[in-house]
Length: 289
Image 1 (cartoon, rainbow, N blue to C red):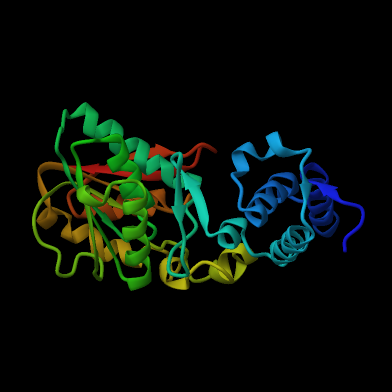
Image 2: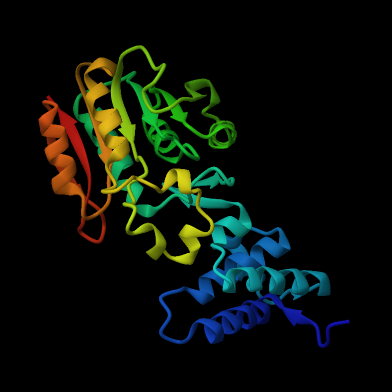
């Protein structure tokens, strides 16, 4: 028996202090937020409203479960992997071993896609997301454009299954379809919008990635080859075949790759308009003729 009984607030502080002590006071990690998410998961509760229950006492088995989760977090496992989901564009996406943890940077693609669709007055656009992963970019876009229909492809069967589950979770299963495909291979038809966030980490940078990424995200979704652009070289030459006349594409890339990607796009007859993420890096580009 754990004595004395501990409240939710006290357990959150305990977990946060354990993480803070292990990481150091100058760590870029967020021990208080991580503790809140881990305690909520151990309780099976909604993290957003957890503080409203701060005075409740916690059963012993939940304390033990929360501390076990904290040990996993301390060893470098991302909170999103531990709890099995991550919020993106205000939606909570389920994850699996074959999917990346959605990054806030990718919301740049969604924001630009929605803005361009509305600017063009496209009421029922056909959208394809190449390398869909959890489906976060495609499904977030569909959630903002009620008349849109989207197709998501991925080389990972696990990722495709996860994206389908997320579509059902958000009530978007009737406006989306997902398939296993190697980029544009076996893809036909014409689309108004192409979205893609291919693997773009270059080979030299892979070993230097944080533990959270290199040990827990699928390498298939990270490795972009020697300069990070191997997959873009497969996709960009196919855009003309897949896009309707007047259609557009949006690509995400690494924050140091804007110049190389722009040169690749221009070499195939596309005009790139660069988009910046919240920290101010060139993170994506809209391609038009």
